Image (cartoon, rainbow, N blue to C red):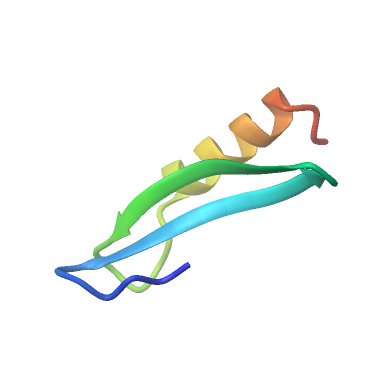
Length: 52
């Protein structure tokens, strides 16, 4: 999802089950690369909902 306002934001989502979409993490993009801490947070939350 991209909304162009002041700055750019990214939202990491997963459609885990037919009836649910989980927002794992949302963060403001300040550089071209995604920070390792943002990736780690999304992965941690994915595991918390039963992902591998």
